[in-house]
Length: 380
Image (tube, rainbow, N blue to C red; front, side):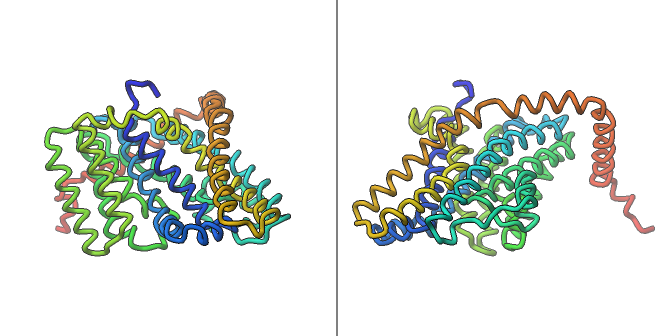
C-alpha cells in the first residue's frame, strides 16, 4: 500500500487483533494451554474467554476498508462485481490452501507424539474441496485448522457487500440495502447461532464498519454516528452481546478518527505496521506451529517447570510470527493471485459478454421490484 494511502490506526488495530487471536489459541489448545493456565491462571482465563472478541476488529475494519474500495463516496458502485469477487477469492484462497496443506502435514506429525482433541482428524478429499471453495462451514465439514471459518466468512461478507451495492446502483438504493441488511443482522440473524456459518450472522459488525466509512465522508458526521449509536443501543437492549458492543465502539472510533485526520496520523509505529502487513499470514500459519510446538512440548517436556513452560510459550509465539513473516513474503505477497487472475481472464473472455448480460438482466429485474410504484401493488 502506498504511504499516502496507509492508515496507521487500521494497521494498529489489525496488528493487535492478530496477536490476540494467536494468544487466544495458545490459551485454549493442547498441553501448552494447560501449562499457561497453571503458570498464569488469570491471564489465561481472560485470553481463553475474551480473546475471540478480537475477531470483531477484523470484521469492522474489513467493512470499513471494503466500503472504501467498492464505493468510496457512497454513490459510485462497482460495475463488475464478479471480477472483484473473483479477485477477492484468489487473494484469500491461494494462501489459505497453502496454509491448509501445512496444517494437514503438521497434524500428521503431531499425531505421532500427542493425543489431543486439538489435532484435526485425517483430511478427506471432500473436506479439502469444501475448504478450497471456502464452503467448509456451510457444508458442515470440520475445520482443518483453527480459525479458518473466518476466511470463508470474510469472503462471503465482501461478496455480499459488492452485490448489494451493485444491485442498488443508482441514487442511494445501494446504501439503503446495506443499512437494511445490517439492521436485520443486528436484530435477528446475529441472535441465532444457526446462522453462524453465513455472512448474515456477521453482517451487523461488517455493515457498521462500512457505514462508519460512508458517515465520515459526509457533512453531518455526528448525526450519522448518533443514529448508529441509537440503533445499535436498541439492538443491545433487545439482546445484549458484548461482541456487538465492541463492534460499535470500533466503528464509532474509526468514523471519528477519519474525520479528525487521526486515522492517517496515529500511531506512527513501524512494528505495528509490519505486524499488520503480515497479520493474515500469521493468522493462517500459526495453528500448524501450535500443533508442532504442543507435540514437542508433550514429548520432550512433560514435567516442565513453570519457567520452562513460559519460555516455551514465548518461543512458540515468536516462531509463529516469524513463520507468518516468511509465509507473507514467499506465499501471500508472491503474486500468485494476479497470475491466476490474468490466466482466468484470458480463458473467460468468450463467456464474458453473455455472463454480463445475464447479470444486468437480473439486477434490472430486482431493481424494478424494489422500486415498483405503490399503485402496481393495489389489489383493485
